[in-house]
Length: 248
Image (cartoon, rainbow, N blue to C red):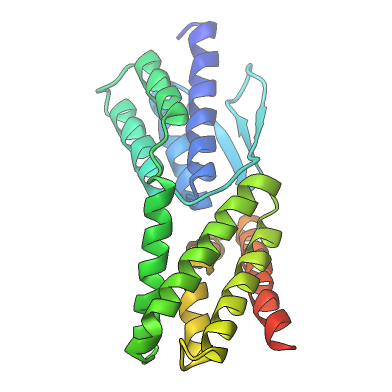
C-alpha cells in the first residue's frame, strides 16, 4: 500500500473511532473496531488509546501518531451500528478503503437521529409509563407526561444553546419539579414524589452508567472513571434541581 493510501487508512480508522465515541459507544468496542480495521488495511502494528475526550492512534513506524479530539457526545445507537457495518465490510474485503472512507463521511454528515418532536413525545410517554411502574395512580399519568415532556424539551433546548449539559439537566429537573409541585397543589395530581421520579427518568444517564461499568470491567479505568464521574455529575444536577424546588 502506497504512502497516500496509508494516510487514508489512518484517517479512516480515526474517523470510525471518533464517530463511535461521539455516538456513545463503549471504549473497548471503539478500540476493537479500530484494531480490526487497521489489520485489514495492512497496519498490523497499529495501537489506539481511546478516552471519552480524545483518541490517540499510532499506526506504527514510519507513520506518525495522530490525535483526534472528541468534543461532543450523545446517544446514537444507529450510528454505532452503521460504523460497525462499514468496519465489517472492510474487514471481510467486501468494501475498498476509499469506499469505506466515503461511507464514514456520509454517516458523519447524515442526521440519523430521530426528529426532536418524536424524542419529546417518547420522553413524555415514557414518563407516564415509569409512573405506572412505580405503582403510581393513573390519575397522575397526564401530569407526568406533561412534566416529563416539558423537562426533556428544556434539557434539549438548553443543551443546544449553552453546550453545558449539567446546567441543562439542572434546569430541566427544576422545571419538572415546579410543574409537579403546582399540579399537586392545585389538585391536578396526587402523589408528588412519583410524578417527579417518573418525569425525570428520561433524563437519567442510564447508558452512560452502563458504559462506565462495562469499561471498568474491561480494564479501561480512565474511560470508566471519567464516564462514571460524568454520570454522577448529571445525576447530581438532576437531584439538585428537584431539591431546590422542594426545599421551599
